[in-house]
Amino acid sequence: MRKKGTLRQILLITDGCSNQGEDPVAMAALAHEQGIAVNVIGVLNENAPEYHRQGLKEVEDIAMAGGGISQVVYTKQLAQTVKMVTQKAMAQTIKGVVNAELQQILGSKSTMEDLPPDKRGEVMEVVDEMGETMNLEVLVLIDASGSMEDKMLTVQESLLDLSISLNSRIGENEFSIFAFPGKKKEVEELLSWSSKLDSIGKIFSKLTLGGITPTGPAIKEGIAAFTRKRSSKRSFLSDDAPGYIEESGM
Amino acid sequence: MMPQDISKSPVCNLAAGEEIRGKWNQLIYRIRRRLGYGATGAVYLADSINGTVALKIGHDQMSITSEVNVLKRFSKVQGKVLGPSLIDVDDWQIRSVTYPFYAMEYLKGETLFDFMRPKSPEWAGILLVQLLTDLHMLHQAGWAFGDLKPDNLLVTGPPYRIRWIDVGGTTVMDRSIKEYTEFFDRGYWGKGSRKAEPSYDLFSAGMVMVNLAYPARFTKKSDPDRQMQELRKNSPMLRLYAHILEKAWNGKYRYAEEMRNELVLLLNEKDKRTVQQNKNPAVQKKAAVQKQTRQSQKKKQKSFIAETFLVFTFVFVVYLFYMLGQTM
Ligand SMILES: Nc1ncnc2c1ncn2[C@@H]1O[C@H](COP(=O)(O)OP(=O)(O)O)[C@@H](O)[C@H]1O
Ligand SMILES: [Mg+2]
Image (tube, rainbow over all chains, first blue to last red):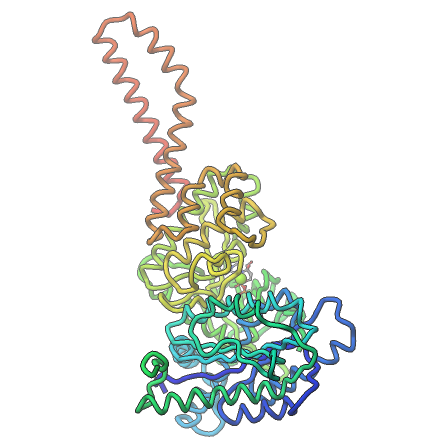
């Protein structure tokens, strides 16, 4: 149980209303099947019209299918929410793992909540420890459709802030950023796996916002990016030793 | 799905007189009134067989359990209790929903803002000295407080003593801070990581003082260093402590004790100056008269002045010790 593992998450930031390609809910279910949690943040303008609020319905559906967490927020709360959602999703995954272990030890449907407070405290220490030391891979999918234009600066700041928090942990982090639609393709990679986000300012300034919202294809591309990463790891490293990939390989 | 409003949750709306029985230990708590609420839950004043306690009821098992773990550790730390002491931990079951809660020592006191309102600015320094003393002990025990802010501090007494409540942010050293508030967070201001280390808390401690001078708080501008420098200059209270605040802001203190000692020195200095100012006219007059008298008498007078001065400094040091309460 204490073995250092890797948590994989997709963080989708969108204002909803996907309108092209595969069903994003189906793609989220596919990601979940492969051990990737899909978290979704729906961003809303304070003065958003009603139809727009309706468009956010899919936010919840995608996260539910993706085994992740969803939250709808106004733009100004984005930074806090990005962190909260990421950390909550980590905790949820870890808790799932721990509960599964508990059931093996204690049998039947025992969960943390069924334990007396004393024992719960001990389990919590394990959960804390895992959250602090596990490696984390976050793939960020940014909705770059026209309606997101006035939110991009905030998105950028929020991601930077997220990296400050996560990089204060003991475990390793890697981030990758994709935008949809991209300049030439439906989905475009803005940043390939990297532990720092200091330079994202430049990436964002190059972004041009398009008209369509291919959310489903974006999630699909996200899954592919995780798969590529995993297979590159496997070919360079013999054993289960996540973390030190790029330097040793390339 | 929409942003949650915690104040609407049932745990935030218990009525006076309502009784809560713990599922595991079966102790009964009778609610008197709500003391406050925050992100993790609500805190009530309640009566029990253990006397009057503060009862914190939450919705999230993990964060309540986490806080309980911290409070348990504190009661194990030798010597003084840091933070409220832990009394009971249990679950409250109502209509098949389970809410975790714990009972802790009730700290009767005023908020930092209420306390400071009628007080002179040196009190801010004295409270900060007390806070830094506790922080030093906490750091020595291997923890950082994390979410340091006026809402999580109380002034009890007299004799006045700053105490902290809400250990939700308290984090083992070198791990990532569990809970923080932007205004008091150096990460937000671009002044460092969110790793639990003494300098993280010292930054927040400095910001607590800034918040006392600017109760409305404010947000980050493009050049936070300059912004903060201006703000320190423009507040008479902050100007007194500007040098120390700037060092805390820049992460120059490695230990809470370092910052504390500099602050004590500064407060002492200031007090001496006021003594001298009060005393000076008399001393000067006497000295003028003495000029024409014999050398030996002059010497005597001098030693008398020195003695008076010594006595005064002594009285002042004692007075300062008294004001610092149990700090030393
Ligand atoms: N031990 C205590 N004694 C007296 N008042 C308390 C105590 N603990 C909490 N409070 C009051 O309840 C408020 C909320 O408690 P807190 O623990 O800060 O909750 P949260 O973690 O949700 O922010 C505090 O701001 C304070 O006014
Ligand atoms: Mg609080």
